[in-house]
Amino acid sequence: MSQPDASLTVLKGKLTFLVSFDTGGEVDKQTLSGFFKVQSGTEYSKPVEVSFGKLTGLLVSEKEKLNKICDVTGSADLYAMGVGIIRVDFDIPEGMTVSDVIMAMHINGIYIDGLDLNAFIARKMNEVREQIKPGSTAKAKVFYQHTKKYSMLKLEKYTPVLDPADLKSQYGTDITRFLSGESSQRRLHSKEISDKLSHDISYYDEDLFLVSYEAAVVKGCDDYFNDIRLYLELGLALSFLFHIYDWKIDAEIGQAFKAIKTAQKSTMFTQAPRRLERSLLKVSEFKLDILDNLEDLMNPLKVTSDWYYQGAYEHILRLLKVKDYEGIVTHKIDALEDLYSTAQEISYSKIALITEIIIILLIAFEVVAFLPR
Image (tube, rainbow, N blue to C red; front, side, top):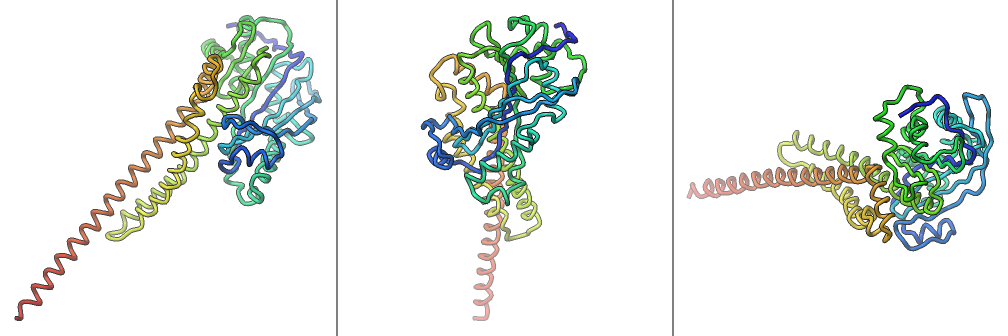
């Protein structure tokens, strides 16, 4: 693959940021719609969308030392499963290169209404959480610190004008850097480029919809862009929810470890099985939620009846490693259940030993009491 020094110039396009965050637990769609006074469908897989309206953005180009003002639209997509996605769309100023866009992303040179991107998104997250659970943001800063950011570049007009195949071959470096979230100028290996450019889920040959774990690049796809983006957001929401479960289960495993250490030090009676049981009950809620809702959401046949979207959605889930994270979570739940069973067996054996000792003592007492007669 060639790696030209010139960067692809954007004449018209959008730079989108999707940031997943925890809304504080599962909330049914009807309640979510009531909180934000918006209409929404009944499908569990589709979010409640809350618009932020028109905003003003600023993209700072380090190369040209120019500040480029642009229009921005923003919204929050809230899922009943307890995850939200803040979405902001920047209209890329005409003449800005893809390299300039990547550089702006990596020098924190992106602003919305006077705030840098991270501060703006954090403020919107807190506003959403506050509406769902008033007072939650003041006392749960540590709990809400985790987020996951995803970037998307949509090319509508650009120069030089190339079809998707030539775009990949001549500007594969630009596209790969964006898909990898990388701003360094190191020379990329041809295998690295070809690997990133192989994840194309486009329907037509003249369109391009490349998806990776970090970002997506889109050319055309006007007829079905919104649908694919919806499935991409659903995949991101599921991936992030399993991250949340993983963090919470880790905390419960820490408590279980302490309980086991306590049981080792104790010779007879201990509360270790009881503590393990409390951790297991909390974690079992996650397992029931996975079985009740998430398994359906990860089944393309249950999410859509369209054969193309089924394949695209399955492809997205694989690239975002959703099923891999589900496997990690279920493995930890199973391990905790095994741990609880082991602790119970140890506890029962101790109780049985104590019972045997008491019975022996009672028999000995009866014998001693009978001897004088």
